[in-house]
Image (cartoon, rainbow over all chains, first blue to last red):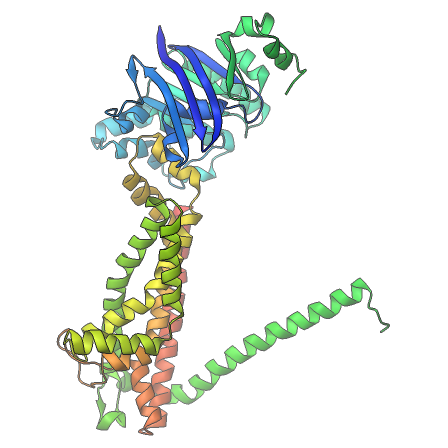
Length: 250
Length: 280
């Protein structure tokens, strides 16, 4: 089943074209990895999927992005609801300087979910989903910045899950973590894909090979190739993809 | 010592020189405080604080001027804080950097450089005479509010800009609106900085004489309405000293002024530390 379908998507920053006519279909409840050298547009692409590029004044997006059949760039789209459905985890763990509990509940509060029963249920559920609940259940009032980087990143993930998204966008979520923490986050991603469609941008080709079902290779704003990870890494159709994954480029 | 100096000698000399400059600055400050307190503290007593001035201030205390100062400052802050913080929020969060923001910022910086006596004259012409508020708490606090506005805008802007962009992004990515992001994430993080600006303004207002004497007048009664004239401590001090009414009472007033500014600062640091512990 297709969750996200992108048609003829281009992004301009002023006169610079950051993405050139991207077409892609992203499967539901699978992990799709986007790889490519720095500045190739993969993060820009990711930020088109929850319209975070709207925040950049000079960015201009052309084309269509359908999520469950609805073009999210249409004018009548409820941007806040879109961003609830499409959660995002950032490169560096960025918890608010608040307690663990307040971090998780922030998303609920902005969507005016005030029922204490729902709030508690979501708090437990999202912390359980990122496997933090057993460690942290007795210190929910603790400041989130006192946690380890890995715990912080899990907390950020839980914060995104608390508003019950369907899609998770991850922008190099492990780049600030050590290899052991990275391995544990990758395990967690396998767990999460049972429920969520995951799109991950990564610098790390091995990571893409390990975790993803599908891989897309971006180069200079173009999507060179998108297909099953196994195929991309063993029998890429495009010479440029091959050069990249074999380390001859980038 | 041989010329040219070795880098090591140069380093030693510069270090000494800088130490001397620092010591000198601290000495000057300490000397002023010591001087005022030495002449002022003997005059201070409970009576001095809670009694009204008699015979133009020659006898009695300074109670009504303390009240006048407090009322004027509270009112000025109540007017200027929402105005200034609101402007800062608009400039930083709601408008892209451009011509408009540059013009507004330039304007407010010019405002900050205007001598206070000009503000006094402006307040006198606009509030006291044109709008017929008379010499009153209202005119005085409006004038003070205008005067401290640039400080509040500036410091609030800096504080808001200092809030990490990542916080805003997270809030937006969770489906927060601009206002939710500003009110729940940006402002709480910026609060210590904003508070600093407000406190700086209190400091400036407590000591302000020229702008106030023109607009709030110098009545010694305890004010009973917004339209009563009042006398602040600094104006009282000025009049006592200038007209040779009582130098010892003037020193007493100066000591009270100094101590109140110090206490406001200490109290703010205490509050800010508590807040920072809670928030970061």
